[in-house]
Length: 280
Ligand code: CO
Image 1 (tube, rainbow, N blue to C red):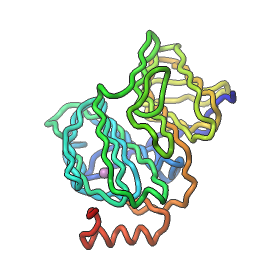
Image 2 (cartoon, rainbow, N blue to C red):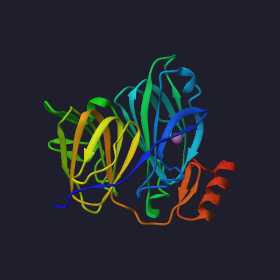
Image 3 (cartoon, rainbow, N blue to C red):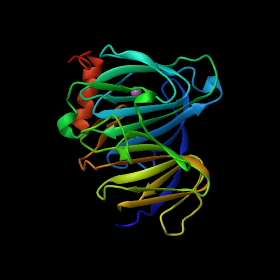
């Protein structure tokens, strides 16, 4: 077993998206363009409704999967496949956009605290033209491991006997939400070929065996390859551990579209402009 150590620690940057929703972006930034197969990670949240009330009005996506995980608050979503619903705390919406989807995500709350994450996972060329697929995971459908030291909610992958509902996925994703008590340890045997990172929501962590700089809230902690992850909470901490098998294909970005070439981005823009985008 080889110990996983920290490669580099990044502070999430303040950004806004949709109709001006304030968020903290840590992947898809000038410093961290992507961590193959992950293209973007946003922490969206505020206690001030002015920061989120305008929401994310209708917009398109192509070539990616978006995984939205709500921790506080409620969002109402609608998309061009006809799917609609309200996301409540603890729910996950896993959308495989394939060749194209148009959706909106609007707050279904007049005030109060909003907190959630959106992760973008790249799709390989062979899946980018698929029909959109849409998976809705209610909070009580997540795998949960709980003991006196920690709680591990499993959105994807397997921890002890807790297994996430998203299976047989091409990048074999692992997505854990971990709450770890002070001075306790979380360890995990990770697949050696996966790229992985930790997003520290709050607290302070000691990762691996080597000395490293102090971690703090809203840090993206990029990890080296290895197969033995050891995380100790210096104080009570809450973090995401996310890993996936790299796709290794060229990446061409055009806002909400991620394809392999610039020509395919132009094609997506044309399809959107001439109304053939979300026709299946
Ligand atoms: Co979207």
